[in-house]
Image (tube, rainbow, N blue to C red):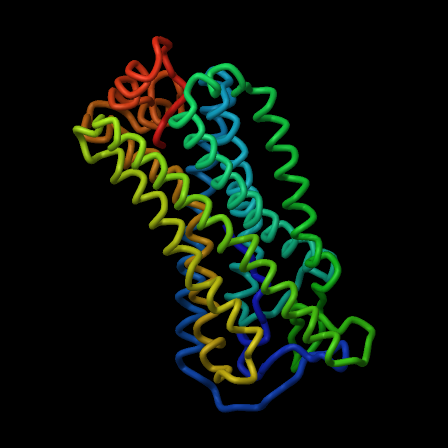
Length: 356
């Protein structure tokens, strides 16, 4: 999941960009743009569907892990991931209302800051958790004996605490720069990087720093780590000639591609926003709402992948609840491929390694 910290002024009919000179929004009057309105309507529809699926799906995952499963390392990873996505979806109605009301914020300045902060927190914690999950699985495949001896629930809980703290720190700019301003009968929730200073260069510097940091920490670096981890897993399994079925590789590709497709357009546009003076603002006016909505979709995708990519999906007699339990559980979700792999590498049973 995602953040609504891209230039919200682009969402509006008459807004051009942040104002780095004053604590108000720069205004550039232009005729109404149909594409902008279509993007707004599509965003509301996507947000609404995402909110419903995300709350139901992630809520079900939280209940299953909390009450139906034995506490394990994977259960801790998936629980924290579901909590981060659920938290995002719980606040998504505020953004649905904001977008549906033509970007009129009626919830106050404090909620503007808190809402943006929580959305950014979801972005960073989700990405960091996905990265840790990928790294954890890579270690389990490459060093199964070491993983069996050192991979504990206590360590996993400690790692999750650290990830939430890091996510809190990376999301903190929203508490500082997010602000509201009245304009043309509306109240806008936007990023006020100028604060009280009258130095436009400082505002531009803050804007660029936040956006570049979000791109690197929230996308580029995690994607590189995730991709490398799964490439190592594939190489290890192929080298040992253990891959009779292509299904594990399809699952790996699905995880990477889903993450990439959901976040890449938004992150690229978010990075280009630092050079907004060189690109038509209409690109951002229509592109940012749609790419932000696409990024939001990622918050409801994990439960869907757990069900449809699970090994019991083709057994229609198995309920959705059973599929989720089988996919999330370390004791039942490991495939025969993984079992064969570890039996050749050691005499111990490596139940902790899964591909979902």
